[in-house]
Image 1: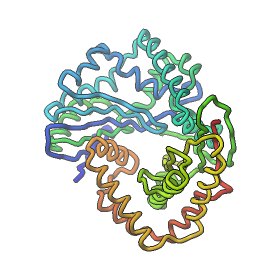
Image 2: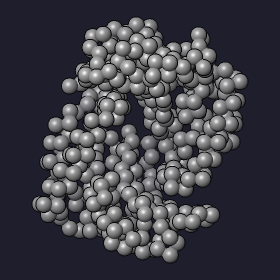
Image 3: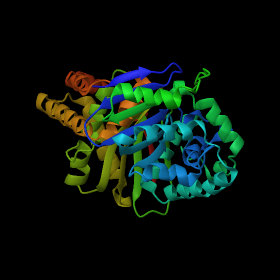
Image 4: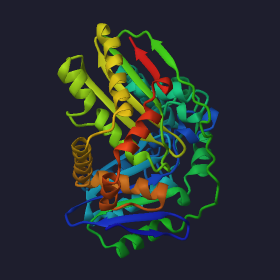
Length: 405
């Protein structure tokens, strides 16, 4: 059972009390790379690095050691729409963890020397992606379909953009975006909700929010794109995809089920059974759906030998077309629903995932659906709805294609 609370300054709290010695807590900020101004490209991710490099009372070593000294782990990530600092630790160390979160989020000083050092680290990270075409292609695909929109930019930024970042830009971005009303503290661990609130109030209630509306440029125009990039790779890499539903669209659950049927994590997905198991054409083939606040992305990715590219493309499109042409039978749909429900229930046993997903949900929707509600939504999906969604999202004339060869 989730418990929620909102402080007077707008900071949201969501907690699930579970027994055990370990605990998980994260501070999620509703700002990401798409919220950067043109001259700030890559800054949201860069701040995720340098925010650990020194505060008004701690040096970088003391920040990194604060959790490690008691066996905990401190981490962070950046997406296009949010930034998260999170930790796993012993439940007795909630106070230590929350005090550290408060210190690094509201008291970081971003030393010039550390900024210059971290630029090299981030540039190395950018270059490492260039050595991983199976990862790089996803970023390049979103850049392709969202040309001219901030959401299309790579989260890491370009090497040149990172070189041009400075302390003044960092402080301006943090002051504009790191506001309590845009934050959620999400927790899973053995602590009473009342004590958790008292600790959070102790370390966070003193920071006020100056309401600054978060204005995002919505991608209004989508034109299917076809692009081939010549690369020195052993395999060909390919993504087929389309824009899809945003967080608010009621059909997003049906699309998630449909994508799971087509190319989800199960070895029995249609794409895996056909392209890998039947023909042996691809080691890795998968479908994915990523919703954002005002848009979404559907993709099918595979890597294959150069001579098999056209056949793989044809087979992928055949499977997508079939889902739009034929209604799923009762047994097919029942098995697909049970599989997805089982995946959700198994994922809920990972408390770190639970903490992060519930925090993200509370940030977006101001609520978290219990898993029984989610399972009920899945069970109510009809074959007709899946067919409608397939025709809308999988339509051949709407597909963009990016190929590395």
